[in-house]
Image (cartoon, rainbow, N blue to C red; front, side, top):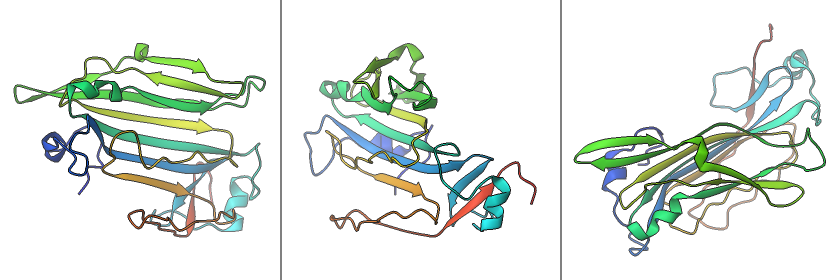
Amino acid sequence: AQNLKFGKPSQADWDFTAWKQTPDAEAVVLCKTMKAEYRLAGGANMYSASSPNLSMRSQMMASSGSLSISPDNTTMTYDVKMRLKILKDSGAGYANVDIVYFDDKNEKNSHDEFYSLKVVTFDNVNGKVKRTVVPNTAFKDERIDDHYRVRHIVVPGVKAGTIVEYQYQLFSPRYAFLYDWQLEEMIPVVYTKCEMNIPAFLNYDMQIPADGLVKKSVMASSVMLENVNI
């Protein structure tokens, strides 16, 4: 069982001291998730069929603006969360992460934006949990090329036993481009999940994962309309 509730590490997270397949690992990703959603102008968001929202019907979509997909009315939102644990003092550097995002140098209105970027460390000090919020001064942006930047996150004061949680939302205007989801890292990954809620009228080729440990699940989409009277 995985602890998917961020903000409070579980006892299993604290008890984790080694990865059985790689006992010499200096750090480990305990949990890593991403949820990607389409957003349409007018307040229409795409959600999975498990959500108790309105079904996707053309007249409902028309009430919120348009059934068509275009750069003018469609954006993407990525909700990313990761929990990492340092297993050895020598692995402290793995707490520092880089997030690559789109920022076109020549198009001022064509760039990704961060929302709610939060990094928190947890340490067990004499049986009590010490929670520390990493300040914004630890975030540095650097341009890679004409189209992309990278946000460097440097987490201070980590040591063996420290648990680090990263949470952020990335707003992107590029509806036709989906960021890759990297299952593996330079260190072991215990659990990872990618959820992509895609409108039914968009055609995506859902490939069967090559590795049997990677499970694929596909369900019909639904839509929730916000600020619209139907």
